[in-house]
Length: 189
Image 1 (cartoon, rainbow, N blue to C red):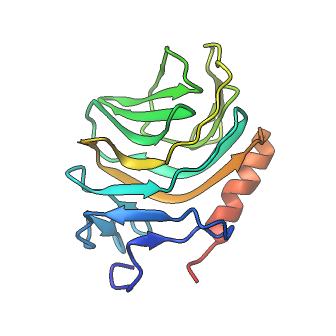
Image 2 (image 1 turned 90 degrees about the vertical axis):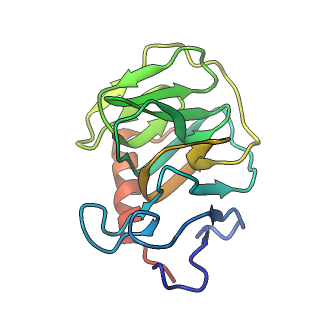
C-alpha cells in the first residue's frame, strides 16, 4: 500500500534478488498503489516522472512474460514495458506497439493491454485470444534491466499489477493462463 515502509520496492518472490524499484512516486492515487476506482489493486505511474526498474538480469532468446499491465491514456510514447533488446511494448494513440527479440518491424495492436508475450511472436489479449506476429524474430538475448512506465527520459501513464517472466521457456496458451491465474493468488508478505 501507499503507507507501507517498503513501498518503493516490489520484492521478487523467487528470491533471486531481482526486485523492482520504484522512483519518483508520490504514493497517492494516480502515482502509487490505487485502492479504489477502475485501477484498484494496481500500481499506477503518473506519466510525468514515475519509474519502475529492475536490476540487470540475463534473459535468453526464449521467454514468456505474463501479467497485467494497461496503458491508461491514448498517447504515442516510446515508453511502457521494456527489456532491451528482448521486447519493447510502447503506448500508442489507439493501442500499443510491440517489438519482440530485436526485430526492426513492430506490430501495432488495437488494445491497451496484453496478458502474455512470447518470444516466438505469440501474444495473448485480455480474453486470451491469440495473435501470432508475422515478422521473423531474430534470435537474441538480453542482459539489461526491465523498465516499466518509462524509457530513458520519456514517461507514460500505466496501471501495473502482477508480472511473471519465464526465462528460457515458451509457455503454451494453457500454461500462460495457469501462470496468470497463479499470479492473481499471490499476496504481499
